Amino acid sequence: MRSLEDFALLNTASQLRRAADHAFDFYHGAIPLTECRRITQESYDLLAAGAKLTHHLVPLAERWSIDRLRHLGIVQHRLAPAVPEVLFIDSRDSLAAPMAATALATYARGRLNVTTAGHHPDAAVHPLLGQILAEARLPEQELFPKPLTDDAVRAADVIILLGDVPAPQPSAAPGARILRWDIPDPGDPTYDQARTLFDDLDRRALLLLADLLASTPRS
Image (tube, rainbow, N blue to C red; front, top):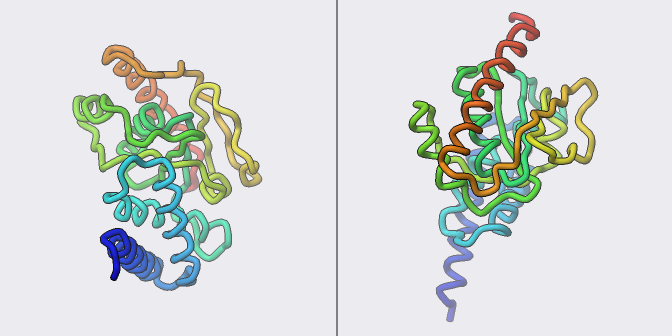
C-alpha cells in the first residue's frame, strides 16, 4: 500500500513533467523535450536542497526553468538572443541582488533580461525586501533565491558582482562585461540600512541602464 509520501512524490513528478512540457511549448520545440525535463527536474532539486518547505517549489522551479532554458538555448545557439542578458550575483540572493535586478528590470521595460543568483542562497528572500520594493513602487513578482548555475554565467552579456563575492566559475562568455559594485555585505540589516542599500542600488541600476541602452545597437 502506498504511503502519503509516495503519493506526494508521484504528484510532484507529475507536476514537473507538466512544467517541462510547458517549457517545451514555450520555446516552440527549439529546445528538446528531454533537455526541458532535465533542467526542470534539476531546478527543482537545487531549490529543494536549501528549502525548509517544498510544497511550493514546483511553480518556482517552472519559472526558473524558463530562464535557465533560455540561457541554455542561447549558449547552444538554439535560440537567438532577443535582448541583452544581465546577471546579478551576490552571496545569498535574498536582498541586494533582488533589489538591483527588480529596479533594473522595471526601468528597462523588456529591453533587458535580468536574473539573479547567489553563491550560498538563503531559503527565502529577506523579510524587508517586499516592503522596500513596495515603498519604491516596484513589483516584487514572487522573488526567490537561486543558486548560481553555469548556464546563467555563460549566457550573460553583463555580470554584476555585488560586494566582495568571487568571480563566477566557469568564466563568462568571451566579450561579456563583468562589473563589480562595491557595496557592503547587508548581513541582517535594519530597515534604515536596507533602505540605504536600495537607494544606492537603484541609482546604480539607472546608470547601468543608460549605459547599456547607449551601447546596444538599435534594431
